[in-house]
Image (cartoon, rainbow, N blue to C red):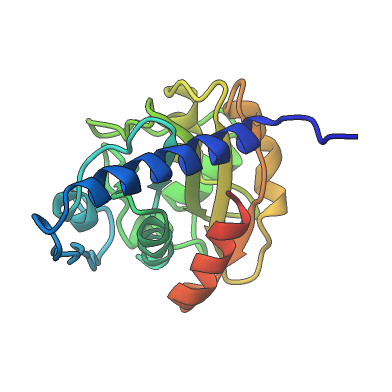
Length: 221
């Protein structure tokens, strides 16, 4: 019995047909363009709550229709490092969720009554976003990255999901964490990502290699 067609199968078939057509067109051009410059822009943005991602400045802003997007929130830079590697594997510019009020070191001092603690303890807290917020309108798959705060997702990521139309898309969560897994954050991600499928979630260390990221991204597509 033939396997039923799925949305992912159709996307892969469409990508194969497009690649075949592009190869045929290039072959017909003869020797007019035998060598091309394949250099790719890269970024190594660092620091917390940058006004914009260096990767976004070095590469095209939006993903093409039917492709993927990489969106992330990072305060200490660990999630940013992983997001940039995923963006390189996917071939798009990473897009950062930036708070309207940047988080300071004191805001993240979990040993006292800090801002992060207060937001996480108040389930309905939704920190305001700085404009513009990441645009994923043309993406079929959204890789969504964040650190784990108190076993779950930072509230600002829920702000983003609740203000973004992700219906019909696939959300692939990834996180960085000193010890907690990603599983505790998924129920809130699923609730906020109305109409989206949430799958292939993964926790990473910021030291993960590009080869390991490439293999994981390939397994999700």
